[in-house]
Amino acid sequence: MASLIVPDVVPSPREDAEKIRNAVQGFGTHEKALISVIGHRNAAQRQQIRQAYQELYNEDLIKRLESELTGDLEKAVYRWMHDPVDRDAILAHAALKNLSQNYKVIIEIACAQSPDELFAVKRAYQNRYKYSLEEDVASHSSGDLRKILVALVSTHRYDGSEVNASLASSEANILHDAIKQKVFNHEDVIRILGTRSKAQLNATFNRYRDVHGASITKELVSDPADEIAAVLQTVVRCIRHPAKYFEKMVGDALKKTGTDEDDLTRVIVRHAERNLEEIKELYYKRNSVPLDKAVAKETSGDYKTFLLTLLGCAGN
Amino acid sequence: MASLIVPDVVPSPREDAEKIRNAVQGFGTHEKALISVIGHRNAAQRQQIRQAYQELYNEDLIKRLESELTGDLEKAVYRWMHDPVDRDAILAHAALKNLSQNYKVIIEIACAQSPDELFAVKRAYQNRYKYSLEEDVASHSSGDLRKILVALVSTHRYDGSEVNASLASSEANILHDAIKQKVFNHEDVIRILGTRSKAQLNATFNRYRDVHGASITKELVSDPADEIAAVLQTVVRCIRHPAKYFEKMVGDALKKTGTDEDDLTRVIVRHAERNLEEIKELYYKRNSVPLDKAVAKETSGDYKTFLLTLLGCAGN
Image 1 (spheres, helix red, strand yellow):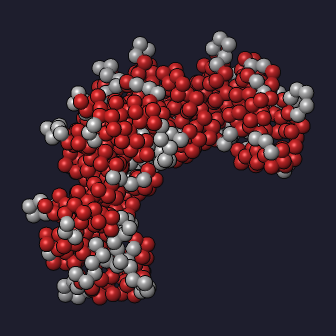
Image 2 (cartoon, rainbow over the protein chains, first blue to last red):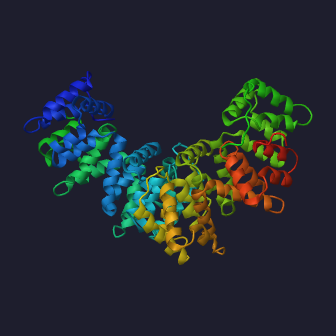
Image 3 (cartoon, helix red, strand yellow):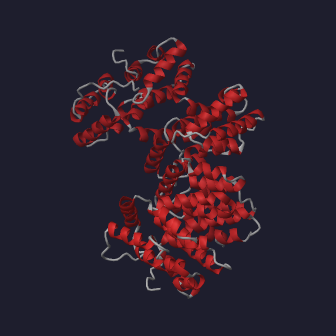
């Protein structure tokens, strides 16, 4: 469930655009007034506001907001104001700068949403950057990381629920043998994780746990020395239980000294209209603290207000 | 230009279905009557006939034709009667049985048509077989062939006409170095051929020829001992000039002792509604014999009649 709160009666895009204009014009910006509008509109409504703003003031709203805001708030608002597939294309493009650090962003986009959603992001990426995501990921990475990431962004997985039990069994064994021998870059491991449907992979992961007595996620984390093991673990977690993966990510981001605002912003902005309620519930189960309280503690100012608004805590 | 001849006034799908019913019912099949209908209808019209036939006789037309016809004619009609994307899915699936022999079919589907056409075939494949083309190609091949084929069927290439000249130059050098050192399976070779847009690749191939004094196609054929060189050459030819590639393929098929009916049927059936006229022109330029005359010489019976009909030679 989404955490975003949209009022029952939404003002017209023109009224919203005018309100935003008042917030950004003149000396200083009234961030709270801005957030009170955009923090309560869904993706389609935000696009309509952007269009109305362009028509009224002959100016691109996102560019204006970029020039008015700074720091974490600017980044968060910039990402929020884009259409979800464009946002993912932008996130993927930004991650290219340092893929060995940012590979998680690519894996999230490739594995934690449906094949059709990934394809829409790939189309948006091509429209925006005039290159394919595949070629850009390939030319910004190397070695095993490249093999895995290119496979993940390229494949259009089958999205059906059919499962082949004997295949799950044989491929669980292939994965287990490779992990046991620490050959994490085995071409069959990349083939299986890179091409099989999510339903099939989940059956394979279940089979792995049932036969080999430990979950594949645990066995992959047991080798922190191997970077590729960590990459594969991210893939498995994004396929197995995306909400749990994001809950853990947001928790880790908050725990870091100084907080990892990039991860925090990304998870909240990307999921406010999707399943942030589920992520909040999982967070509470694990930490016995509501996610909004933890976010409020680790952030400040208008950035905090904006995140809490997206978390569905308007009266923060 | 297509070679298929569709009459100016086309009978209703119902009339066509009735005519086909008369041709297949009772003792023996009147192949010529059948061909006179289906050999002059485009893909949309054939689907309407199939639907009308189903409604009239509560029977799948393609299944009926399969049971009535035999040999090369049955195969050709079966392929012709399917919608083009379904047909490619069927061809790809059939090619899996022996990919080291049939890899050309996969490369043709992946490289000789547009990225969107490939994507449509991938969707049709998933609907039909409940697996992705990617995973089936991956699990039916191994080694270098797998690396190349999986990359080709996976990527959704950028389809724009923009070309980066300095990239073309640097990647032409990468390709040349790898080919010179006979490292045909170099991961950068697969990355470049597997992910770059066709416009970019053609600029790279041009640059290769200009700087290194020989075309990449020729340099790849100079090593007949290496199977992967031949695979890469097929990729380059399908990207560089698909019509020329298919003209050569149909010429080779006709020259073989006994004729390669699989290749011959595939090229004619797949291109009758696309650019078979261009392929015919290229064939005539190279051989000084019209393609239909060559086909007539090497084939016989109703199979010959059907191919000549698709070639636009109705009065054969």
